[in-house]
Length: 152
Length: 152
Image (cartoon, rainbow over all chains, first blue to last red):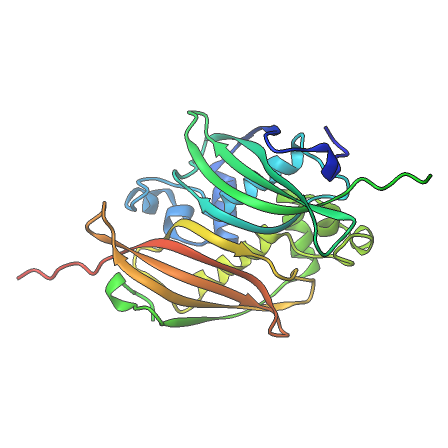
């Protein structure tokens, strides 16, 4: 499933990722760098917060989903360039020790109006933890390459 | 401006962040960990891509905005818990050497229906580079604490 062009996917196609484990170390390191709030940084402080325990930054959760997508079965030639994301939700926090898995579904496929050699795929991403609970969901538009025309 | 409760902000309030410089090293390190696509990883490969040069992962850009917000003047007591993000856009890529700055505007302030000690602030975030060009925009809902009632 690698080496995909726009023409190789269609609405309804689904791409499941591998699993990824979230460690306390990785959660704290990301938070120190980008989201230094007590409930992402420190176990004792997190116990006192509304999370009632250490939880990953939502931006860390989104970055983990990106890594799973990039390591997964949906690989476009030349990459997929994110244009925008809608309805990004974190229904439940990712916790240390959680194992998460991403499912990507193709929602729409269309040509680019401005770039004749590219097209736009609209995807729905859903990431779940080991209990099947949704920890992240969003839709996104990404620009991918069209299959080059053959010389005649 | 630190130590804010829900009651301390209202629609129209604006919070400008400090600046942050994006280095090639940081762009590549984030991409290696979370978004390993050639145009985020390697200068020569990026030249051949639609970006025509190395560019930061959109998720790195969003994480930088979070850091700027967390280091900035809008500090809620007990933190701000992200519930969801809408209309996340990356109109232009962040490049090595860019300096970015975030402006946060309060759009809406309301009480939480489920948590009587908390409320919801809706914010609009806009991050610009050193040329004033928008590199990231989104709206977000975050849960923050209400000011505790005084004992009588």
